[in-house]
Image 1 (spheres, rainbow, N blue to C red):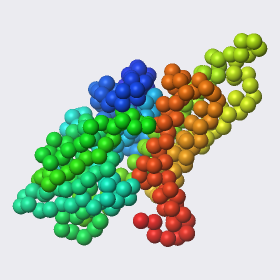
Image 2: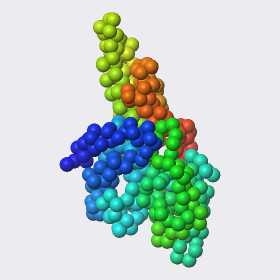
Image 3: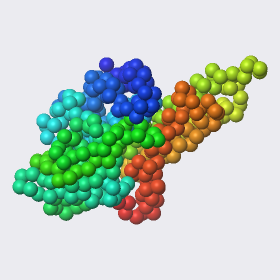
Image 4: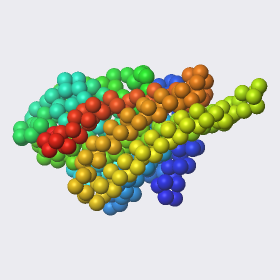
Length: 371
């Protein structure tokens, strides 16, 4: 079965069936992740030579988008797994890559810190040499799947080398690593995003991913492109799911005294049209970004910066419109709009935030150094 067919089956049969409960209970989407693992989709972008499917950012984006139409929490967990996998594929051992391709790991990124907030590229946490081991200390502010991932791709200040950061493979069960209890917030309630503390956590020096001090190039050249494309895809999926839910509601809801469905109103149809246009525009930009990455176009990094900002802004606007279209009924959970309204808010504040991206894009347009 193709990865798209597998994704469609899981999205409709498993993810959709669990999405409401995941949100209501702030519960980790374990059943959906198990189905994705069983289908080999956790190894989607792992190389074929280590047992993966050998796909790239395009496939990752399409899978995340389809899952996000049903459950943004599940999509964000998958997004972080793929972003961490991209690092592992370039800098991890064959043994770890093989385990990951088989679905033995659920990975995530541990970049953002309390001391540098959304400036994920500038960790203040330390790495200290202790013979053949390294002692890590940090206060990570937000780590998706914090209590469920098997390992983190962890950033720190360099051990000894120059550069802004180093990256490490850190198993979640490492002594000295402590994640707070699960997330209970406004949106993305099932993604288990919570602070993680490292208090002199010891890992082997061989767990270094890439060169010491070489974390920033990995963040910008490996992580940022696929992460921005996938988070854009997540926003697009949320918009698509909300548009579907709004269309279903207005077609089924009637003015009995007029014997007319809400969809008979031109104003309602116009709002739905705007929602679909905004969604399609964001999706076109995302797919053009993938084209730019695949063909090494000169404007690839500009597109990477643009696609996340555009999709996140569009998602808030589309979900605002969906709430208006569905009226008071939108505040009821069974309509399926208010959950997505809350989930859509995350895209603008997730690092790199929309405001940061606007600044980066502006620097690029002015010929200034972006990073």
